[in-house]
Length: 498
Ligand code: ZN
Ligand code: MN
Image (cartoon, rainbow, N blue to C red; front, side, top):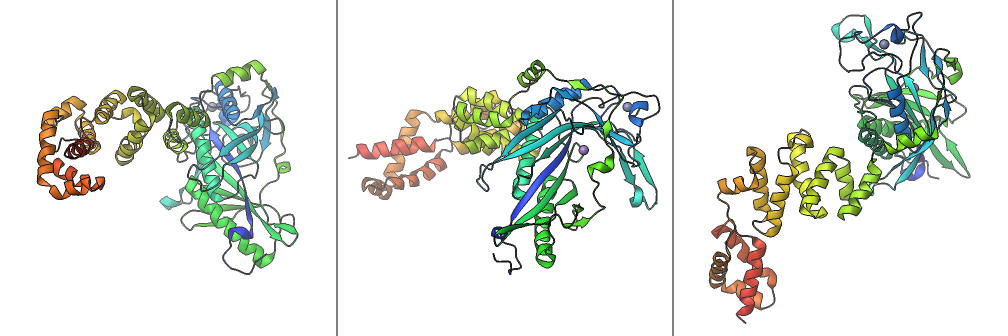
């Protein structure tokens, strides 16, 4: 094995990545009290004796949170435990007023799932990433260190304390930073589709920690670098960058020191986004440091098979199913189905409506991607507020297909419909667009043929593509003509000339 080069090559080692994701469940109230979970309220206005951990207060489980968690776990192909309980995870930190977090330790409500990630562009092979467990727990509060204001004080906002979280832990099945990012995108898409979480990273609704090390073949054995847990990544892009940096750093460290897993402890490193580096943080606690014990104030939860079946029935279609369904129902490619599904359920509904009205999936998909999506990307906003509704767009696409006008004219009409909120008929009227009648078309083509003996001779000589020269001239004489019709008619006329 070549370890002499300074640039790590992919064949020098295998990158082993596992993820731990916390997602906030989309509930109105917290996990064990009735306080609101709305983001952005003034600090410490959404608190009560329960989430502040005042003596004598008792938690009561939020059923809605538990149901959403089950939905998430089922979507991740997990097994739901018939019996699950709560545990206290004890540690001291200013943002944790009770001195412990209510979490789940040895009996999580679900385990043994998987979520597949694939790349329709083929940058990596599809891979099934196993999920070790999904459990429920409450969030802590938020510390704010006011260095920016030039003060040395720190403040605490406990609005978030007690917010319901699902913790999702994967096996170390990911093999590159790109895969990790793609997998996170798929996870987010799934959870948003199912209404489990809004997965808004800016508001802290989705947080990711990543474990990474390298497996390096050395002769007959595999050397494994110490596992590093990376924290503080605030976007999926940061996750990819941090993992890329960390893989290269571990490679360099291994070549310099030969440090291996087992001989040095697991390390925690924080991602410094502006600097683009990971930096060593405090020593990571082992689970024994948390002194877990069963939560005495909450009863265990039992889940029947009937409840699991009901949750499954109410789940809705996850993206993987929807992609397959769109591709099959509308005869579009896996790539096209992927593009549409990745935009969210509302866009899929718009597409299905459009495709049903025009009866042609590929054509609908083309207009969705080239016109609707492009417009949304340029102007922002959501498909729900898109000014051209599926019925109006179907009208336009149908007329283009009929040959009333060509695609570029159709695009002009589309732009005018967007700008003016008019119907196709109104735009056609106001722009002076009229379908060209058969007689008009015939005389135009005769005129073109008479004026272009060279082209006619070329076509007669077998060069049909020479007819393209007639189309440009036809458009100049009458911008409403359909190029396809001009071409077909001119070729016919030339053939009739013998
Ligand atoms: Zn509360
Ligand atoms: Mn956790």
